[in-house]
Amino acid sequence: MIPQQIRLLLVEDEAILAGVVKETLEMKGFEVIYAADGQEGWQLYRQHRPDVCVIDIMMPRKDGLTLVQEIRATDPHTPLIFLTAKSEVQDVLKGFHAGADDYIKKPFSMEELMLRIHALLKRTLPPAATPISQGQIRLGGYLFDYPRQELHFGGEPQRLSQREADLLKMLADNANNITSRKEMLLSIWGDDSFFNARNMDVYITRIRKYLRHDPSVQIVNVRGRGFKLLI
Picture 1 (cartoon, rainbow, N blue to C red):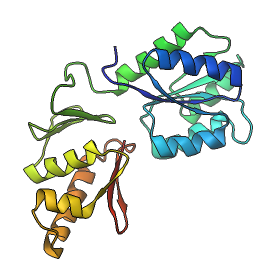
Picture 2: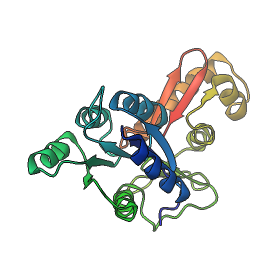
Picture 3: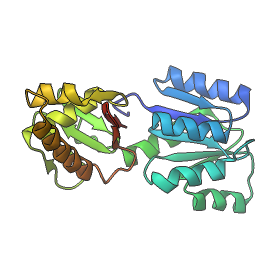
C-alpha cells in the first residue's frame, strides 16, 4: 500500500468514463486532477506536478502522444499510463517511444488500473524500508529526514547543514506556495540584512544541487517575493 495520498492527473475526453475513473480513484484515497484534453492536461501537469498520470491517446486539441513527449522533455520520472482503444502493436510501440511506462486497453476494469498504478508507484517512490514518520517528508522521489538532517534518494544519504535543513523544511511545509524571503531570513538568520540575504541565496543554490536527481522537484525564485518549492 502506498503510504501517502497520491496526486493523479487523469486526461480523458470521454466524460462518462472519466467520471467513473475519477470517482473510483477518489474513493480509494487518490487526489484526482481531471483534464478533458491534452492541452488542458499539459497546463494542469505544470500547475500541480502529479505523482502519476493516466492519459488517453486519442484526444482533441492535443493527443496523448504529444502530451507525454512534452512531459518527458522535462520530467523523466513521473509514471505515465496510456489509455487506448487501439490494440495495434504499432500504437503501443509509439506510446512507449513517447515515454509511457505502461498502457491499458479500453474497456478495462478499475481493479486492473489500480494494480498498474500501484505497481509503477512502488518502483518510483522511495522504498518501504524508509517509512514516513514524524519529521520525515516525501519530496517527489526524495525522502527528507529533518531531525537527522538527511536527504535520501537511493544510495547514500546527502547530509545537510542545520541551515540547509531548516530552509528545506520551511519550503517543504509550504510546498507549491510562495515562502517569503523576509520570513525565511527572520526565522533562520534572525534578521533580513543584505549580507544574510546573499548568504541564504548560496544555501538555496546548494539545496537545488541536492535536488537535481528528480527534475519534478524544483525550487523556483519568485522575483521580489521569495521562493516556491514545486513537488
